[in-house]
Picture: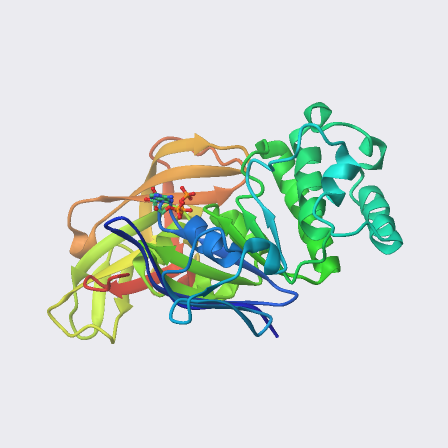
Length: 362
Ligand code: ATP
């Protein structure tokens, strides 16, 4: 069942058209992530869903019920929509203790809701802070209080705007995981804004990618990561190796071999993007290292140890033995080969993406 449906949403601030006909669905019991670069309109879309911005064009339904419709002049106030909201600064009330912050949005503190709050405080490990004021809590504890406050009135949909961006890196992964488990137990539709692709991949059932006020692709994390519709979507998930060439016989040549691109006619330009982690290496020059038509030989030039992975610059011959090109390669763990060490290089085909150069995202 759809928790939230937004159809044909357009929105301008003054002369600037921020949202250009955006439609999306966030299903009940699922977590939908809005992912995109800063300024692409994610928060504006969330604020429209919440009723914090007046709708200018399009319509919004929550659990099949119309809550905003530009042509009907309908725009229900936030408190009439049955939504829970949580912003990146948590916005806790400094003069209320933890329990009272959580209970603040309840029309009536029933025994059932009181029990839910007490149990949830225990469940999220903050029951000993029940009577504390926000200023004595850590960022992670404040985040949990804000989450419980948003969920306490049992909203149809929970809207989260960058809920983990205020947390330090070491705590973020753990709190993200705890939050996800808790949200799954609550069985609520969640729409979450983030500009962190790792966060979207980890948390989302469904990812909606936005660019310049438009949706450029929507799908499961696996669909988005392994079948990006455009180069922009592919590049959201980290640095890529870029090659450009002219299509001949339906193929484009790269230093890693030829790749098919049936969608682009011969003599047109095409580009090939290869993820850093999509390039595999083994030490030495060995033609039988891998059964791959994209096997080539190279030499190590730079090595950067990042702890969990190593970032290598590998020099390989260009197509048709033209000038050398530098491949950026990420391998798991610590690898510190000698300068100029010989390596055999091939690709994981699932991490190679071929596009026409005219493929645009807008
Ligand atoms: P970020 O990830 O940085 O939060 P975002 O994708 O959420 O970005 P929005 O906050 O929706 O983007 O902003 C989109 C554009 O709209 C930005 O250029 C922003 O400056 C502009 N904008 C947002 N709110 C207003 C407003 N109330 N008045 C004028 N311009 C606004």
